[in-house]
Length: 102
Image (cartoon, rainbow, N blue to C red; front, side):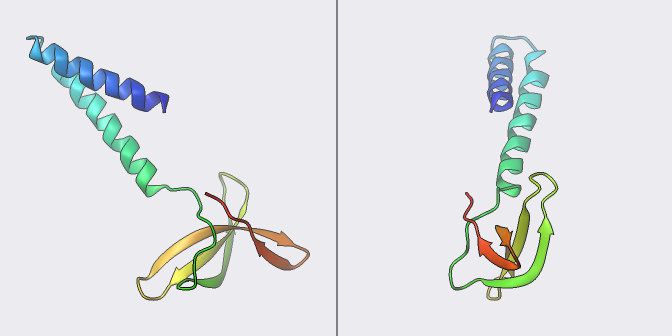
């Protein structure tokens, strides 16, 4: 969040400087815009795990441990679109129970 604020300020300051006749403001505005774009793509592409999907989704046998959180994730598949979702799964004594995450 802080990085987004700093990038927005840099972009705005660069544009304002360029408007006032300072050519050095252009690179500052461009780099601020690039950082804002990268943050937007990162937040869109790398979403957190989702809660248990509805009936259109089928649980697969595929599970893995998320290296960032250390939590066991189960893969869910939607045959109509081919989309995949990763849902946190708590494993209790050989039985799986699905934990909702947002």
